[in-house]
Length: 269
Image (cartoon, rainbow, N blue to C red; front, side, top):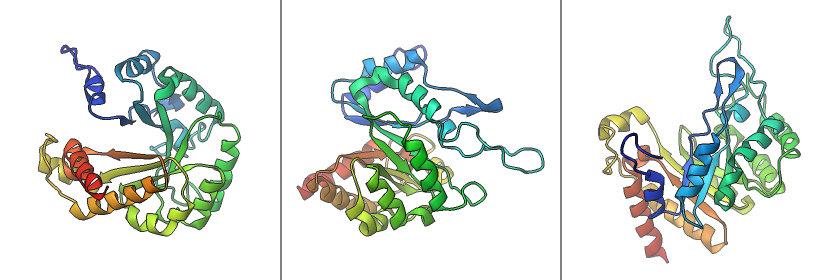
């Protein structure tokens, strides 16, 4: 938000040019001893005060809710269960903490890590657990799921999303299959909102290329952007609400990638 000692409100500056942003800050929330950290009231109020009417945040739900187990194992190599996994009580507390954002609250995204069999036996089991969790969620919010198991992206998963009016988060990167292939297979089953996250591949490689300056395109993905533009065009024609979130690690400069895809979409209109 503000840079120390300079008093620059970067979110306010950003919101003068763009109409949405992804909030990642509140995702990192589960710490040693099962300590949970939720958004600080003063930070939430600051976010709300920094953006104009119509600006929307797509917000990652804290990982204290989406982690099946802690990142670190117990002694002996055993996985340490997360007692807060899919806690409706904790979810209610989180939503209460961000209520000052009001109309600026957009999709609430459940980002799950790669759920290997020792953490989640099957897609069926995941659906069963999440369906129970859904019954305790507050109404009136847009919920979306990001799955990082390629083998979960099957018809039963998309049927489950459609049945419960849940949005799908398309993740391009992190060893997931191409979002364009997934979209082509399941586009008839999608519901709004749709979140598209362009994140790219090896972070260390592109950080070395950019020297972490993030002011230029160093890994152009022309083919991807063309397909993304077509995908977005089709979704807009079908009146889907779409959120496009782009990371600097995708091509080297998120603002310049945004400019590139805006030109593609404009030329298709």
